Length: 145
Image (cartoon, rainbow, N blue to C red; front, side, top):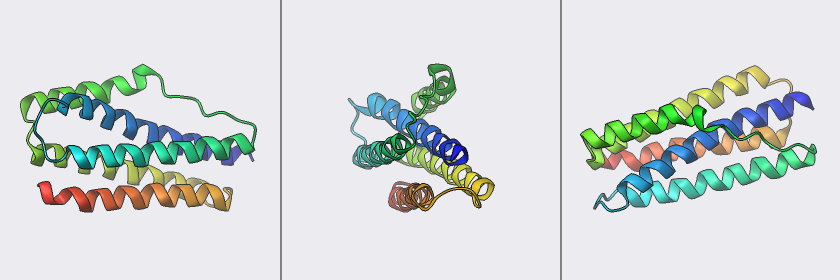
């Protein structure tokens, strides 16, 4: 059971980082005319949905997921601000998003490999959903490159 919680915490951390990055990007682009904003808003909702599923599953173990502190997110937020201040074109943002989603996919796959013999079906299902969502997001935003 402890490994299920550890695995869920890793999924939570990855999902929360994605949500935090997209939230920051959405704030930066709020007053701008970027067409990619719709994709960002939709993906933000998907991250929120996955985080909610992780929270609900953790409660079955009587656990609550630890939120990532500001310092854990600060580097990502600063990087986003710097990159967008240099170039806020849809193609640049699409490139940044593809890099972020790819890192998320790699991270979840590493955790799946590490915990493959010890996690339950529900935990694996959420991980697969996260990977599937990120892969689909990559495909959807390639049109902006």
